[in-house]
Amino acid sequence: MSTAKIAPVMGSSSAMNMIGALLEQRAGQQIAANRAWRIETALKPLLRARGLATLDELVGQLVAARTGELGDHVVDALLNQETSFFRDVAVLDTVADAAQALHAANPQRKLRIWSAGCSTGQEPLSLAMLLIERGLMDSATPPEIVATDISPAALSRARAGRYSQFEIQRGLPVRRMIQWFDSVGGDWVAKPELVRRVQFRQHNLTADCAPAGRFDIILCRNVMLYFSTAVRQRVFDLLATGVRPGGLLVLGAGETVIGMTEHFSPTKAFRGFYEAADPAAPSAAVLG
Image (cartoon, rainbow, N blue to C red; front, side):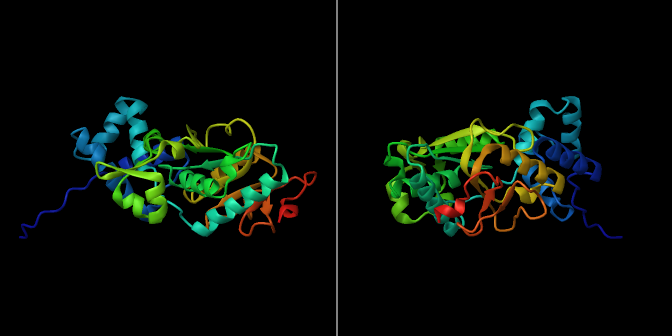
């Protein structure tokens, strides 16, 4: 008879299903069946911190607490916060081109940009660097960058502007690293004059209203991938309420508005971007 030990199971299927349902309820995100391993991997630190051995024990505490604050911690741990500085740099360069064109077309009006699902802040900080380098931040009406995320932990890191050596090397050229970051205790901390260019706010794309005001450019990159079709359509409806007529929407490479919404359509002015559908408004193409 074999004496080989069987590795303990981290959680039953019912526990995994309940945790997945909690993530979808709170954040609208789904975890595909072939990526269920992410639940165990992401929650291991939380299990250790609470002295728990299995996901079933964690679910037991969630039920006892009626999810509450513990549910917030579980959801926060499960959120995909993959990001990097200057991710898809050609796309960000085009965003900066669009910002310059929109500003030139109406220099008296403040240009507003929304980075939705900003994670730990690398995207909006990268964009701030680009706009500073192009002189837009020195204009009489400097652009406003609003960056939002559902995760309080991610936003706390973004506001601190503190990144590890690994994070700082992912996409950030040495010149910009030296110009905009200081080495502190093995980490790299963004200079206050860079961080203050971005307004970081907590926001749930699937449950909250759009931030106040209208935006000229909305970046919502690689966020829709984790939503069901129905949730994507609701998020597109939300984004449509937050964009100016003729404003631009920027999605990730694997995302599209086609078949999802009539609020946005491809624009010829900036390849790969989408324009807010409003026949009565001047087309962004005139800015090209």
